Image (cartoon, rainbow, N blue to C red):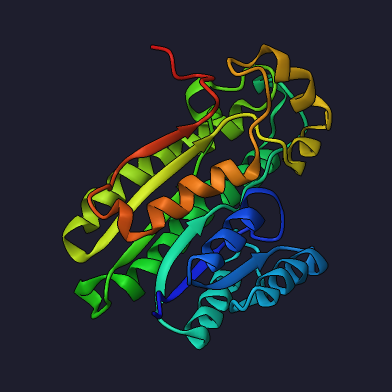
Length: 252
């Protein structure tokens, strides 16, 4: 059965790579987007091909509209778009708000927020029944930082991901009658390379013992939530954000 094409932005490593491989195992064709690490993206595609799946690696920075169009054009060549996983993200070195400058904020919001919105818009134009599409699913990867604020580390990242939470709810309601479901997954402290971007590559490991479940999350655990939301098993779920945080940040 042809389940269509899923684009995973930032699909060359971590949560994105785990999501791409899991989605491929469920019968989707994959567009594995990457910004700079072509070798990593090709390795993900090779793993998918080895299991009999379909995948192509496509370079593109989601903060650049021309690159976004390039990503979606590549998906069009593969087949019918059925899903988008807005996973590409960026963090910066740990800093306080009074030390932020416009260059840092511009990059933070361009990748984490503006890119997600622009990619979602391109996906809607292809999937919405209003535009002649057959429907589909958008999953936005947000962060526990959207709720916790990330004080003293990256409040700007938390704010950018908070905007993605709002995008998830607003867009879900906007396209609910057009065959598109929009949901989010909010990871907590996950064992991926993203923590190196804070200038503290061991930050996650240091936090593990203080987490409610006393361990880091795994990329595969986040991917399972994402792929469920992509699938027809979540056919009556839209406008929801699932916490995959091991209990962190869920208390009232």
